[in-house]
Length: 189
Ligand code: URA
Image 1 (cartoon, rainbow, N blue to C red):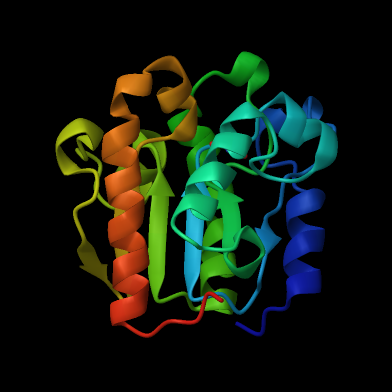
Image 2: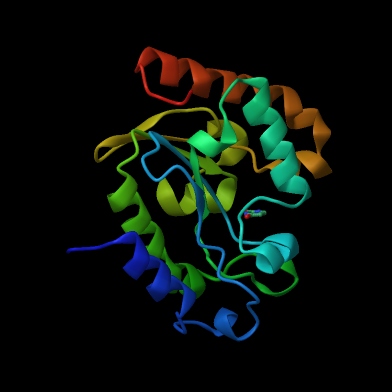
């Protein structure tokens, strides 16, 4: 398929494949370096993301920024997107049918970017992108080989806001991600 960023953005922002288009303020397409070696993929936009059109700008996003900063991965050098491009009402979990309707946009983003590493933010993303029975409490930080990239999952920053006891594990996982980037000599700085 002869895809382009312009076409992909146009398709996503005019999409009416599920009900979420009716309540969206903005399509939350994705942000960052389109030649990144690393992609971070969350679940779905929240209120602030719907307002701004940018993923991970609310409280969870600010916490994500702190982890990226702590392990010396500049946010502007990675690409950040979500499984869903439109906000589910009241931030409920995405429905399987909504994920099915939306996943092709993410697939096209991955095909254009060709990342070497994908990091799933949270269980919903990991269950969709790694395996349906992914258990985030047991398998966070583990690496899986898929196609041309390695994929791992970390806790969703929104979960860390609710359960700060998991923050140490998150920092360790993020350090391991940075170590992997260094080992593979991938460009992030
Ligand atoms: N949570 C997500 O999964 N994605 C966002 O963009 C914001 C919050």
